[in-house]
Amino acid sequence: MAEFVELNLDELEQVTGGRTATVNTGTADNAAIRNAPGDGKIIASLKNGTLVDTVGTPVYDVGTDRNWIKVKFKYKGKLTTGWIAASIVGLKRK
Image (cartoon, rainbow, N blue to C red; front, top):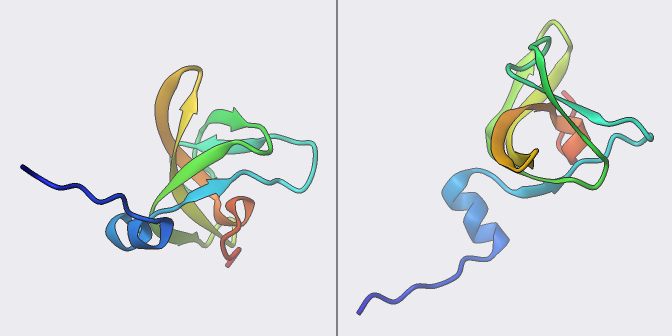
């Protein structure tokens, strides 16, 4: 019989490159989720405190002078992926 071991967050990051993060815009504004890093089309808007899972590593966009990270999240009842400014989920801005 197979034995399963639950991974802690540090171990999970090593496997997926991702982590669970909290959206924090620092204001009352929602965070824009885009279909591509930088000036991609806005596909969703998330409130402060929303939990997202990061996917992979941040990418730098010259046009916006920011790092962007791909995230997975629940939006209108569906699992969705998109791009968010890395600083909004506690990662390095540039």
